[in-house]
Image 1: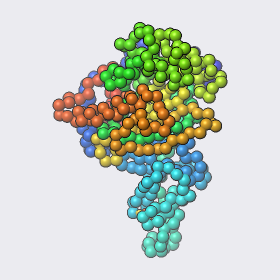
Image 2 (image 1 turned 90 degrees about the vertical axis):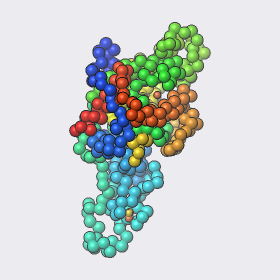
Image 3 (image 1 turned 180 degrees about the horizontal axis):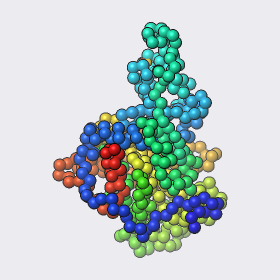
Image 4 (image 1 turned 45 degrees about the horizontal axis):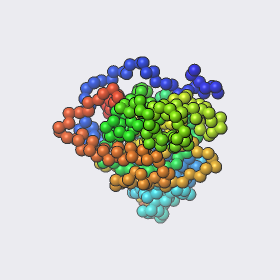
Length: 440
Ligand code: FES
Ligand SMILES: [Fe+2]
């Protein structure tokens, strides 16, 4: 059965019997790749300027004049809805002497964009509006020119409720770049989800070390042993063109926690999170996911969640999509936890980790959160406006706390390069794709 009863195609499964592709075995030599300014500069021009980058949500920019600023590496961008309701993206830079046009606001509403240095101003469609003492500029004696002093616009497109931007303007169309991802995620209806939490964290590692840490679940046993009591660490993996995915069963257990009788507190948390009563559960710990599937299926016609479009396993398991070069959609039936790994503006030994939480939320339900950017270490259990399950914030803490040590070690002359196994196939694939872009 490839589609549900309403004719919408299901997300394809991963065929567990098909062998993993052979995409190389050699070590991935790490040092330059993770810390050199030369590599970072080339990465900027060959990777980030060429791909479709994920910017703000469309829902953040609803009315004319609404804007969001977004940083990526050395650049800052203004995403704004113009007076004709058209979404636009501009480099966040004044065309007079290069001051940042919006230096200090993440979002807001502006009737026009005025630079605080000499008060030049632009309309929200990027056209020049006013230059004080224009008659003192030889080129402006006959009035403001058409085009020449307009803001520098960036190509954008939308998919999944997100605004995507392509800096060099030469990428193939967005949907072509995304390949099968939109078709795979379509049943989850990401465009209808709402952002209910958004925080950025500075981490002391290269952005690719951050991306790598989320592209495999081989590390559960080492650093997140509690995940073995609420999910299956051995994911099925599939490469999808430049992108990739893995599927982890949730609401289950991994070795060594098999065939146990008592329900772990972690699985009780998981059940409670979905509104189920852990005390009423009578099956084996590894089968908790089946109870969740049944529970969701029974209410599928009386809920705002898209259960009706999803196969049973999607009602419990996490479909983890990586969109090259730096976006993760950690997808479950009720919402998507989105991670974006951004390079730091100057230092290749630092990065920003954006955590954007989306969920299907009824329209009459108010959502409250405040965007915050943390540049020093935080306690992840204490900083969210909408409290997260304890296990999730613990896992974030473990990842965040460890990455500084990965960065320190990966630069050592004693490190001979990353030695990767099958469970880390997506890590290898990611670096292969980086190399492909860097070479071209
Ligand atoms: S730099 Fe913006 S008005 Fe002069
Ligand atoms: Fe992790």
